[in-house]
Image (cartoon, rainbow, N blue to C red):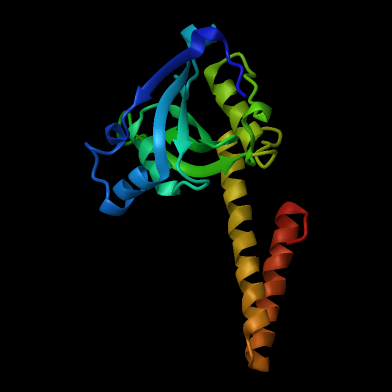
Length: 221
């Protein structure tokens, strides 16, 4: 379970409607709020005054929302609605029965619209018993705390190289995910294709994408 400083505890229940009633949300997403979520609690407020840290240039506060689920799944669109509607960075603490999972998006302020955010990519821990869930506060500024949260929750996927920003690390990881998806689709098409000449062409394309993956990330696809 999370062990944050007592001063950070906020612990206020938030009605689900608060997150979508004033937004233009589709009926399907609104239905997912009702179907997927049992309750939402604004659990922690991580800020310079509650952590005794310096303010960040990108991150002013980090909110932790504890969401009790009705099942073991939640639609990603629901989290995106919450993320876009709240003008702070968010850690989602998802709970179902005795299990828990952390999710976070790489989120940055929209330069064209004040107090709005662009959500780039989501990362998640494995589901584990709630008592085994860990998230360590590391850093001297809010920016640094947020970046370390991203590294921990992404389980090592986000490790910026020397002189590389976290945003660049996220973009690189998005490229990795896209290439992995392309490889998987091509492998499925090669296996299912009956015509030899089409299969041979797909195989050729698959090898080119795998070569690109190997050159970019030094791993097998």
